[in-house]
Length: 187
Image (cartoon, rainbow, N blue to C red; front, side, top):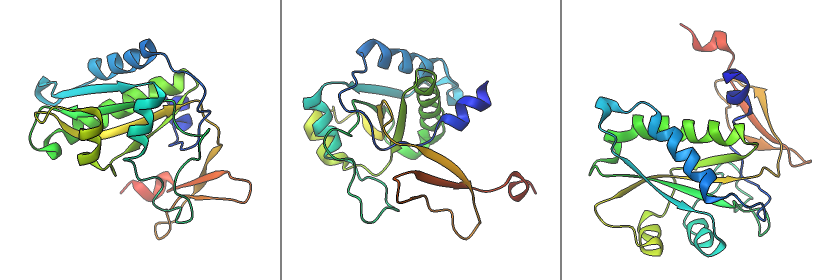
């Protein structure tokens, strides 16, 4: 069962923008992150939620989409995420909470997949603009942004080769994600 969720949990970048994700659903995802492991149980993560078009547009404007797809600037209107979760930390050093943030992101995305939603984690964020747009207090540092929505694209796993692991889209718009074979990973 967990394997099925992980296989379905592919980064998705095109959504049915008009699909509403209720605030209560986003709170369920945060509860999954809250219950997940935290280094030394310090629980240094905080979360900001967005599920309305005005705030979503502000968040969207600060994200860099799909670096490997050089001819694509991100989803067009109507295909944008319908919700976002910002992962913040109370620590000055974002790197010191990397493990906690990664665990929280995975927990949130697995929760989303269980509800037939998908998402994408963004580390490439204009943090200065996002802080201004959403009036995030200076005591909180922005670690990641997770875009969420009902998926409008198909994402498939392909066999990968060590020298070419870049994701790509075919002529039908199917998003391909190369993955190394298990034997290539175990020493």
